[in-house]
Amino acid sequence: MNVPDIVSQEYAVPHVSSDGTPPPPFPVVPPATPARTLPPLHNFFPKPPPVPPPPEKYYAATEICKAPPQPPPPPPLSPPPLMVPQLISTQGGSGSSTYGAAVSPEALTTATDEEDDEESMPLCQFPREQLRVLEKLGHGEFGEVHLCEVEGFPDSVDVLRHSECKLVAVKSLKLGASESARSDFQQEARVLARLKDPNIVRVLGACLDEEPLCVVVEYMECGDLNQFLQEHIAETASPLPPNAKTLSYGCLIFMATQISSGMKYLESLNFVHRDLATRNCLVGRGYSIKVSDFGMSRSLYSADYYNMEGRAFLPIRWMAWESVLLGKFTTKSDVWSFAVTLWEILTFAREQPFEDLSDEKVIENVTHFYQDDGHQLYLPVPINCPKEIYDLMCECWQRNESDRPNFREIHLFLQRKNLGYKPEMD
Image 1 (spheres, rainbow, N blue to C red):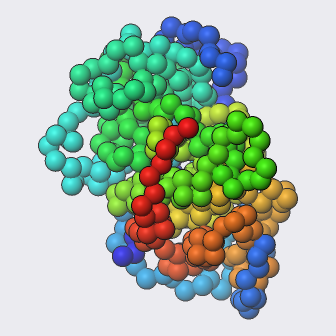
Image 2: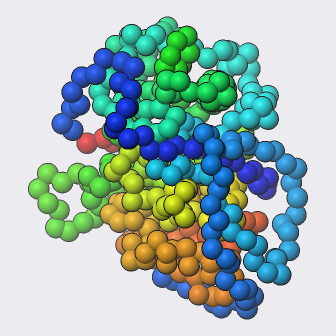
């Protein structure tokens, strides 16, 4: 079943300098130490013009628009002008949207129409005195993100009461934010709190009674998938270093299957993530995976975002060509990003996608996709990657969105490849 293309933008997150940064809203404790080229196609177009800057706003335009399914438009006779969405602010940082999906009244209706009364309960008020700050994860114009430990929690928060992991991420809105920003922050928290899926991080509650306004989001004890992969090597590596942490091929596919399951859920609600990557997936016990969006908040991943004309920071190496060139984000552009994420998993996140290309060359490469001139480059086949898995990636990188699979199909395919696998933690 084809999923309608949904255009979505998230909150802008400019960098906030250390000067004048308000103190964290909780007691702070010291942090713990912690190419393959397709056959030529003959549709030539002139090269698109330079990227114009996006409009400047305190928050970026944040709306999920629902539209009825329509047939794919015919190829344009000439390339349209490049349009860069204000995906990420001028200085980077994390958006306030947990899933990279902004919130609108339409999204609120979409997320709640099929929920029962129990799941539609108001957002839980989380007592801020029961949160102990461990470290600062990131910051932006909207405020800050802190990693916290829950020292006590409301009875209504089942996900924590029955979990050994008491870590949460707390997103706070900066003091003195405009009334519009406050309203957007609260509405987003209420909408995202209604998203309930085993492979999506949960909004557990919020502190909306006094400033700074805070949203409490689930975290995972093993951290993000990018770092987790880099701490491991393939089970088939030879020779194996002493005390090496290994992951089997089956385990890698097991984790990828969970990501596709979480994305299938977002797809069913017409939520568009727009920054799917291993840095934005969290790992728990038993190799459980939950999709999140904390990657942008960390300086560790600043090189994964390209400064587009000095204004927007974009994860161009993970983005579909239409997202880079046209500013178009849909569930099918998320499918493209999923294939890059799958490539990361099978390469143990040892390098960036298109490591040998400069950011400018990456943009040039997606232009070849637009032009269909046969010069576009694809990520290489990972070592020991089965042909059918790499074929899946290439299907996700099809030029035309209608030719790409949806997440329901991807999840079903990976489930079959993963049949019978049961993980065992080290």
